[in-house]
Length: 365
Image 1 (tube, rainbow, N blue to C red):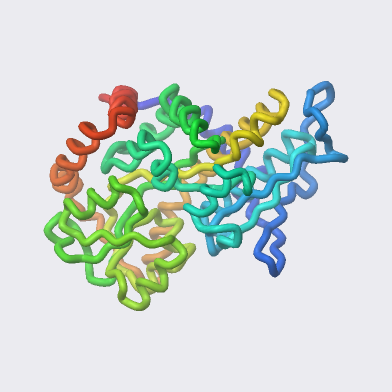
Image 2 (cartoon, helix red, strand yellow):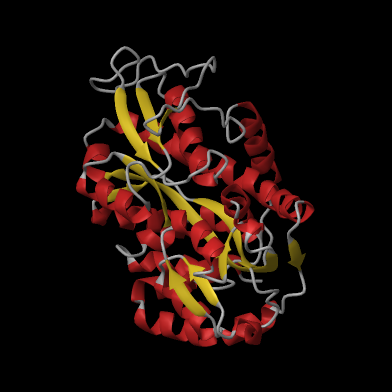
């Protein structure tokens, strides 16, 4: 792949993360399950002369933001809280985001529906769920689309990524940012999976994406869909044999307790982001819109960088805690076996095919 020089950007992101970003995971939760994200003693930006309309530090715009993660260590919660901190800082306190975790305002699908309907201001949603409203986004679910983090940062900083964000606004919800959560691996209770034939008959929980479902069924597994907050119980009860996810989600939700065989497939790059009701966003002044958008993208980039390191560390942490892993996965065999998935996608998804061409052009050797 063409390597993109990102060292200066990454240094800046790491510095920001250490100061106020993804490392700031402390929140105050009450019995109702909501979290009031606070910047504490962090300095507010100088917003004098900016037109925020009726909103100010004394009369802030109050936004409700939902995520469905059960743990505050989960990347969904960290992104939500980091955004809440950043937007408060950048707006000088003119925007206050209250974060509701644990699915108290709905699971992934339900919260996105609420944002579209306007009954909820914001939510953290996964792109496989978003693609149910904008099929072009499902290009991000294709197996082995991105090879490494150079590819990922190139994409996130590209015109095609911005085009994808802008296009989603037609649904009634705006995507404020995208963060890369990491590469998805397989966690199984039945043993390692190193080649496609090892998946025969294995009941694998996958995110509700047509591309994911088609991919796993094509490889020989029996793809099962269910909400993320039901996965641990399903593993414990044997309803499913395995699940795929990034290391951060696995360790935060405890999947390795019942699916201790981790196959490092790194077969898909998982993205999610913060959505906001489009009408709510458009009702704001351009300067306030700009503050919210920039804070969201800053939070996503900082969290992506932190997760790049953290996912590697957490894989080793799970192994140290009793899980087992194999790096001996024949990725070339899995990619070859998924050719029909690509063929079907490119022939049936016109917008997704255009995005695919643009993304592969960005990352071509």
